[in-house]
Length: 245
Image: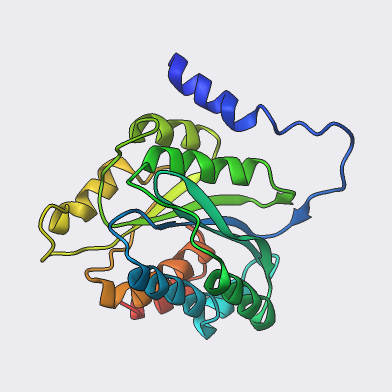
């Protein structure tokens, strides 16, 4: 293992050991970190639109049906915004039905903006892994759901190094690239290819592209259904996700 990757892995686990015996972890089907872009390319209106998309997607009947269809009938989710720094807007929550989904969505909408600056994708991926490693939840699948509208990485560790360290921990990275064909200076049409090559990784990794911000909500909903179902999800669930194209 390369020294820099070993160092990053140590950073992910160094503070995980409890000082004393703790309670048994909560069990669920999936640990899911929603990493949402809040960098300088996202203004206040776009941030509110993005948060609304996550809140609505998580309480969508098809998404709730996918959660109900898992082995445990629940998933654990946290919503984090990233830029130069990372900000946990809604902490780890077990979603097992409409009431929990509504409460989590409300927390997303109510949270103050705490992430500012430019892009630090590598640091965001490592923070997602740290949040998974240090929670009190146990699940057979652990996933980081990364969304963004560029490949910039102006500070923090290189994306490739961070991705390798995260995947080495058994965590899958999925992605939701947000296209912007008319925006000069952004990856635009190439963003899907770049995310496929440089960001996603781990067992069953995939991406779903929101071709424009207007299509963000429907792309997110489809992606969540696939994510919750997992690589071995039921044919019915995966057909439902495909129908949302």
